[in-house]
Amino acid sequence: MVGARPATDISASSAVNEKRLWQRHMAMAKLGGTLKGGVNRQALSPEDAAARKLLATWAKKRGFEVATDAIGNLFVRRPGTDAKARPILTGSHLDTQPTGGRFDGAYGVLAGFEVLEALADAKIATRRPIEVVAWMNEEGSRFQPGCVGSGVFAGSYDVAKMLKITDRAGVKVRDALAATLKAAPTPRRKGIGFAVDGYIEAHIEQGPRLEAVGHTIGVVTGIQGSRRFAVDVVGEESHAGTTPLRVRKDALKSAVAVVDALQKHMHDETDTVRFTVGRFETYPGSPNTVPGRVHFTIDFRHPDSAVLQRLGDGVDDVAKAHAGPCDVRVTGLSYVEPTVFAPQIMDLVRDTARRLALPNMDMPSGAGHDAMYMAKLCPAGMIFVPCARGVSHNEAESATPSDLAAGCRVLADSLVALANR
Ligand code: GLV
Ligand code: MN
Ligand code: MN
Image 1 (cartoon, protein in one colour):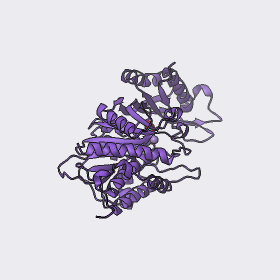
Image 2 (cartoon, protein in one colour):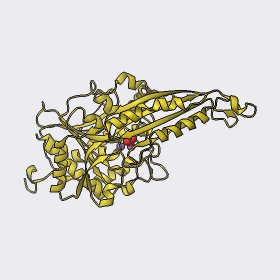
Image 3 (cartoon, protein in one colour):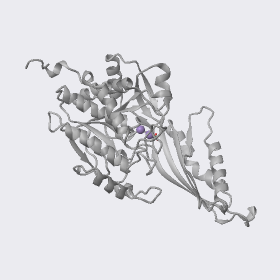
Image 4 (cartoon, helix red, strand yellow):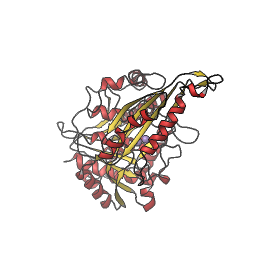
């Protein structure tokens, strides 16, 4: 055929379309877009449903197969030539923080989708299917814990238990998921989880290291461990004008003392411990009623499994010792051991980046990702690209079209190599 090049002449990376990848990000960022240029598209919200619908629409236009499993993971599949071969998975998440950015999560999904489109454009066949997945509720901000979709997929979380989780308004995952699937209908994928031959997730770094040294690609070596807790401090509501301080059971006073004590417990001279109280709620929230209850969350992370265990296991004792006249209940919500990615995936990503002449470095991830659950199932790894000043979980989050495309090119050739094994 005149003008047609044999598929073998064209690499997947050279077929990646930077402009299309950027446009897809901008279109996705409109769904839940905020006045400050960020995105509020929390898991299983109407905005999340709209994002899923958009991805499914793009996928159907390209003739890819779309399906959703029982926990709401959305899969887009490009078949391989060997019908019996296990697929290679890539992806990330479309849900965001309440004041999230345009790239955290969306990049991994859209880079994966761009790879499928690039392969289709260049008529490149792969032996294994390649599937893009948008994992349900990675962020864990509306529903806790995070990484629910990938955790269920990997067998680490029980699907029935996860469907019963509620948000602050008491809405269950089960009901929010039903509403989402009604608004963004797709065929149902039977069961939960299936055999996967390899997984690579592309993501913005969410930290400043790549930008600082002027490198385009991070070869991710692993992810630090993390634990989440919910803490409820219960005192007694009473009149702010009449109740003497010495007889009060002021839940706020106790909660502040508990947080202060926990901050001391977690103090570390090397600044390796990550300890965050990101939600702190006082009930009934009336200026002239002594608070009867405080609810707060703890996000605690460390790369060393022993420290993660020791400091995390101390949370309950520290809380009880500093709650004064109030009762305190500590509930563990998640416990994820540090992840070490597969050397074969790290080698593949590093070699691909070098071949494409992209400056790269090995680096661990401070943030959590769905890849930590996939690493339990199959050889898994990640590709990082820089983001401006390392800012993330912030509406100002920013990345350049060329860095996003560079990461996508590394992803494309790495996925094809895995898919032809
Ligand atoms: C993911 O957003 C995380 O909390 O690390
Ligand atoms: Mn993310
Ligand atoms: Mn995030």
